[in-house]
Image (tube, rainbow, N blue to C red; front, side, top):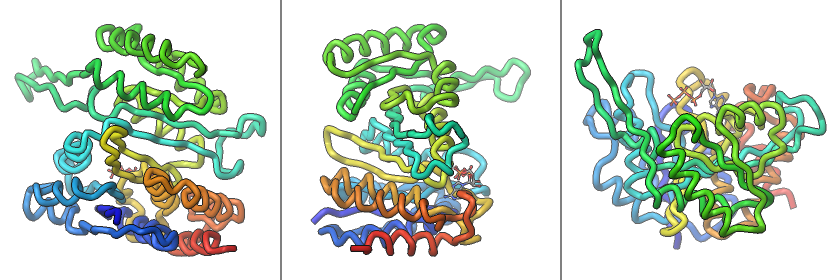
Length: 344
Ligand code: ATP
């Protein structure tokens, strides 16, 4: 039986994971959940350890994991969030961050031109290297001569494998986004790996854009894109843009994957949203759509499609939380999705 490690986390994390687990239950799959509800900011504030070896072992021994959100306004440095998210990405070598953006209803997009609303693209973000590699340091800290360095790491293995994954999920095209004209060394490595990947996939349409142009194109016509593959930091930024174009952070889902080992960590793109935590208004659709990605990863495509159809029907009939212009609560939206899912 497949085990799913569940980390509800902080803020709205546990609030959106509740309805997401209800949807998972309703699918009646042969899975068991292992809930790590002690992994949160409270524990970190008490013990100083974001994730123990035992926690990592429990997550590693599960086939997949589902995470709500981690983060807390009392913690101003990044040690806690990095201690969970970056640790898991590196420990499990989840080198792909897969972030689909699909417009569930025309009404949700800020782009009003009806011909330009068929948004259905994916950001494939390199997830273990780049500017977030954690390599760097500082000197003369606090003085006027202070210097800080963060290394933008690219390895041939890291770049080739994420490009390979991007081509494996392409339906129409793959667009490489970088800034090779300004970030020369890493840029040239990406370009060399890209030429090899393009040559190996002659039937896939390909293009290349610098990240500034890509942001402009996404904001003017996102329908032009299928798969965008890019580095860690550009993927982080562009996937918030695609999320906004498809209705906002509340509906954006993501998967952190290692396609070789099959391990995956699934989570909504949003964080712990302390401003709305406890109000009962957090949108659970990002977490529910993360469950759709999770069950699809387990080979249950039909169930994943059923969850997506239920979400689309819920949005189409305006049963949504305030971030999407509705007045329903987290629980009511969760119940509406369940009702749609159970509809014969
Ligand atoms: P963290 O520090 O954990 O990343 P954050 O508040 O900085 O948290 P997010 O949680 O990603 O960043 O969200 C930014 C804002 O978007 C939130 O403050 C909230 O207003 C809104 N938001 C995010 N997720 C949701 C959601 N599921 N439903 C409704 N609004 C949301």
